[in-house]
Every structure is written in C-alpha cells, then in structure tokens.
Image 1 (cartoon, rainbow, N blue to C red):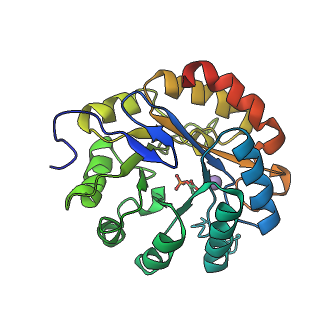
Image 2 (cartoon, protein in one colour):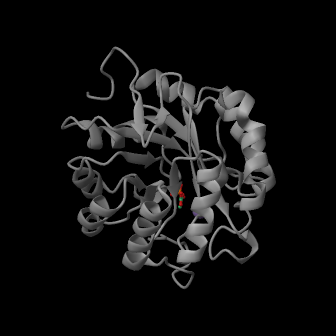
Length: 260
Ligand code: PEP
Ligand code: MN
C-alpha cells in the first residue's frame, strides 16, 4: 500500500503554500465560478492576504438538476486567465474523466468532490497527472473507504495527493455535515499524506465556519479550504456558508493563532 509507507510525513508545496508535517496551508475562494469580475475581485483580496491558492468550481454536481450547474469549460478558461493575471495558483473540481486532460493543462490543482470519491475511473485517470490532486471524502464514507479511494490515486506512485475531510451526513440538522474533530488525527495515523479539512461545507453557515476551523486546526488538520465570495447573498450556490470577502481578513486573523 503506497499510502501506508512508513517514514517522514509528506509536505506538499503548491505555489509556496505548504501542507503537512507541521505546515498548515489555506486554500480559499468562491464555491462556483460565476463571472470574471467575481474571480478577479476575489483573487485580489486573497492575494493581498497572502493566500496563494484560489479555489473556484466550474463543474457543480448539484442535487437539483435544475439548479446552477456551473460555467463548465468557459469557467475553467476564466479561472486559468484570472489566476495568471492576478498571480495566484488555481484549484477546481473535476467530475468526469473527459475533463481531466484540459483541466490539468489549465488549472494547477484538481479536486475530486465528495460525490465522486468512489468514481474509480476518474481516480485512475488522475493518478497519471502531474498536478496535485485533492481528494474529498464521500458523503457517507468511512475513513477506510476514503483511504482506499486515495490508494487509487497513489498506487502507481503519485506523490502529490492531499486528503480533504469534509464531514459526513448524519441525522443532525444544525450542521450541513457532521465533522468529527478526531478525523484528521486518525487519518494521519494511517497515511503520510497531508489531511486538510473543509469547514465551509460541513458548517453550512458562515458564522459557524470560524469555530469549526479553529477546532479542526487544533485537532491536527494540515490546512483548510474555505469558501469566500464578494457578495454571498447573490451567490449562485452555497450562499449561506460563504464568508463575505470583506470579512475574510478578519477571519484569517482569528484563525492565525492556531494556524501558526
Ligand atoms: C466543493 O468543495 O465545492 C464541494 C462541492 O464540496 P463537496 O464535494 O465536499 O460536497
Ligand atoms: Mn460549495
């Protein structure tokens, strides 16, 4: 098993941001790509705050097929353009093997979302690319199933994999997904790859993202992926959980103690 190789914990470095073995990195940006203006505005604020990787999704696997499905290829091109223009690395979700070639040429980091953790054909394709890949756990997956999915990425020798714990579906309605504070600690005992968390989708409400971030970093998470948007009320997806850009600096300051 590639993931379980003993020895030093891996440090993954992306555009100067480090994850793992004591380094806690941050990725931030909007849930979805909506316009070039939205991306430029976000990228500039992130850059000002020393964030080196911007997330933004072009493919949105939505529960409701009539909800906004993302800007798809046009969105990928937009994200790549803005990343270059502003000087920030880019991160996006891909949902299908047919997107791998183009996305891996244009975008720095590719993400496998919760709904595709067990899309093994997608994982096999991604195991061949050079870009770092972030793998999120499935909505109802166990830690072992999550690790085995990661093994699909790692088994031929891929070294730049980051696990992202995003919580699981439970009966609790106060949160969107339940995020076990022990999860990163447990996963890190079973793999040498970094384990970050996504408190935005788990909390589901912007006011709860900060306490969850602090708790997870204190519990050993190697970093965060955070949703932020210039105008969350008008966002085309996940409008309750995205931190308004103008509050993002304050958010960063408040996690700083634990982040360092
Ligand atoms: C996301 O990060 O944009 C997302 C859709 O999250 P998840 O795949 O964890 O539901
Ligand atoms: Mn989202």
